[in-house]
Amino acid sequence: MSQRLSDNVCFALYTATNSLVRAFRPLLEAYDLTYPQYIVMHSLWYRNQVSLKELSQDTHLDSGTLTPIVKRLESKGLLTRRISEEDERRKVISLTEKGSLLQEDANELTEKLVSRSNMTPERIEMLRQLCLELDTDLGKNVQ
Amino acid sequence: MSQRLSDNVCFALYTATNSLVRAFRPLLEAYDLTYPQYIVMHSLWYRNQVSLKELSQDTHLDSGTLTPIVKRLESKGLLTRRISEEDERRKVISLTEKGSLLQEDANELTEKLVSRSNMTPERIEMLRQLCLELDTDLGKNVQ
DNA sequence: TGCAAATAACTTGCGCACAAACTATTTTGG
DNA sequence: CCAAAATAGTTTGTGCGCAAGTTATTTGCA
Image 1 (spheres, protein in one colour):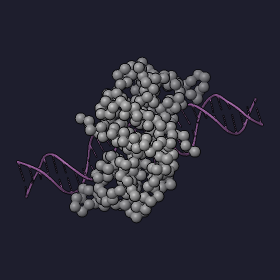
Image 2: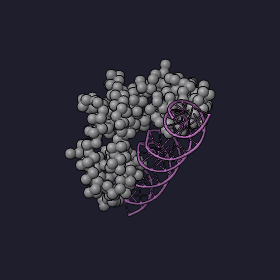
Image 3: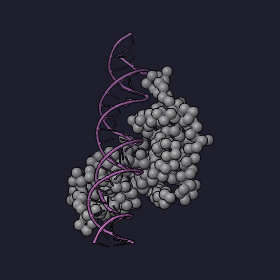
């Protein structure tokens, strides 16, 4: 027997993420950022001066995805990329002042968005933990 | 103060969905389907002979996304598109026999994948409901 | 020391996801 | 009845997300 799409946890997750990114779009427009670009900035606000590899580990995005995102952020003047002196394969990514300053405004966007939902903090926290759990579980068994 | 990315529910959701789609890829490869294509097939297995508009409402994907997906499924011989006789703006999408038969094999892929995680059925169900809740909440306040 | 293996980043190709603009029908209200 | 508005679907352009392949540098080991 076939089930309704909405009975399927995978579809629910997929759809909620699309809704989330869609809801972020108008908020991020003010900062000329896409959601993945915002993720990268968010990572750098927490830990600056990292290599693409380290950024990849933190954001869970692969280098083929990150390279163009980081280049776009560079062309917007939010960060710089320079070749590492110790290891010339590595590129060190550093926030510019403009990139650092963005944090003050853009940092509570998540709060703003989450408050738009009527979910309690407990349910939001539950959702976060279930997502992290699924993520690690699926990452493990790559066989 | 800036928080870790993983402390952020939006990032957790985004990342879990990417993991999910990545985990689906090798399973769906056997059927020559992508995950969005699988969603469309899944919708049609439940309710056949629908317009693109109805498919859009069920899958929560917009027409600009669906048109190329449906065309690809048509070129794989899994469905047909014909102009509606009552309303010539509408296209009626119907599964072919090949498309219907796929259901038997591909229908329990979600089970297969979810069982790969170590999450209990209760936690999976909780995750599904939280995602649906967030989705409807974010969809409402489009102002 | 020298060279094969490993590593870091980049590039290419494909399929979404969606806004915005467009075409072709149907509905509607004056 | 008929022109304007609404509706269904397509097209175009942009930015992911990632597999697979490439280049350049470093590491490791014989």
